[in-house]
Image (cartoon, rainbow over all chains, first blue to last red; front, top):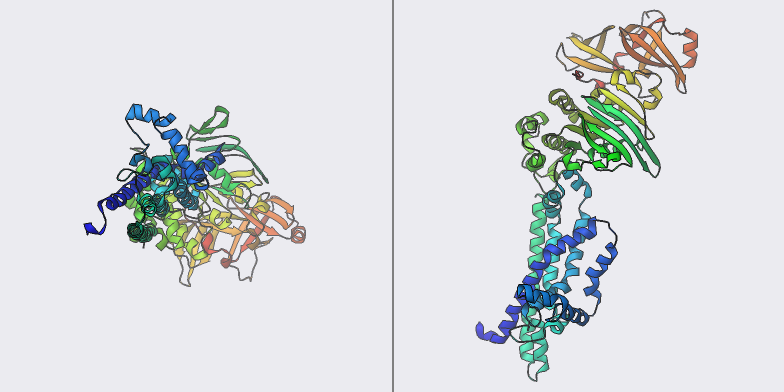
Length: 232
Length: 365
């Protein structure tokens, strides 16, 4: 099994999985919050927030990567503070890859969850309030369970996007084997070397397998959750 | 005691209403668009009115002048919605328990088992709302509201979405709630039959304004208000006691003005019931009619006459209790009816619709 992929290739696969899982898990809470705010609140500047969230979807990924580098790089305004105060470094580390893919996947996740929230009847939330539930409990006991299918869909979508993220990642954290070389970066690197096609093809197959597995898992999870909510 | 004084503007409606709801069932009656639901939502805290004050048992829930408005979850109103609004992801049991999770410790309230029995939903506890019939859903919604230990129950046409059979299934439960729990209830409806059966107080709402309010028997027997209830629906309420089941299948009831016979009524002798007598089902005679098939003839006195579009509304006093009769203008002139005149009110036994037979009135403390 181990000789099927070289250690470098394994590292790329493992790194990609780690980066994507962290990107997905850490963007879930803010993703749910932003989706809720966009779906339920009305306030001045809502369109601005909406545009900001969707920006990574429409900007060239290289631009997003560059913006990340400017803000979260060692000398970036935010990066400097995080480094000094918490010792948290993003530039040219795997954490930066997670940040980049998280930012790129964020709009997709928010979209899926926002749609789910908009499908929840606000009358059910009003009913919960009349039964004595404070707002946060209304959210936790009524809204959240009802949007679980949307959250699952959004998370899987974000995970898949993170697995495939290339442009912003390579711009922000470069392509260092074992450090920041994710699956797409590795495939790209192999294709740059003469005779690397074979290695690239193997990684492409790994890529396809992971994507298929994620898709099947999301279908299954989605159905299980829907069954739980619908009460079969 | 709930006291409401609100003003709110919508496109197409200027709501400006003031009323008080004493203990018992207060029915808010009005056509659709008259502002009933808006009023109830404001009481529940789901709608912020432009201006107003709402107080319950001496505590202010809303006072726009003082910028006070308790959020819905701190008002402790049990709200039964027209469409039930059960939580689809929870079982019936969890739906019923939901309000209890948030009720303040030590709040008075009915016990779970008692309410489940009262509403007859014991066999549904482990089901999900999607597997309940419309009538079952509404019973669970009722139970859920009651078990949140509210200080007041709000019901916004809880029967409107149900067919006649389901209504008939739930009405007895509502009566039992009214009689056993002693919770004040604000009941929105546009069905006279429901109001005649359940209400102790009626508030009549027309185009956002309260046009009348008072004890149900008084309001329903007021000839001036009858057009507001609809000419075909207008009719007074008589209190009666079941006297005996007779051999030919009729049930004899005793009213203040004398006996009334009805087709068999499944109620034990001695029980107090309400009869609703539609104004259009009452005939008037100057002398006691002889040789007539109608069994129910009550001696009465004319109290008040009011001519309107649909003829003349006559209020009679039968044994001290008011009855409404609607007759044509020509009949009124031919009989030369005038206040103080003795007459006989002829009611056909079948004219008393079974759905308008209700339980005893709540004795207001």
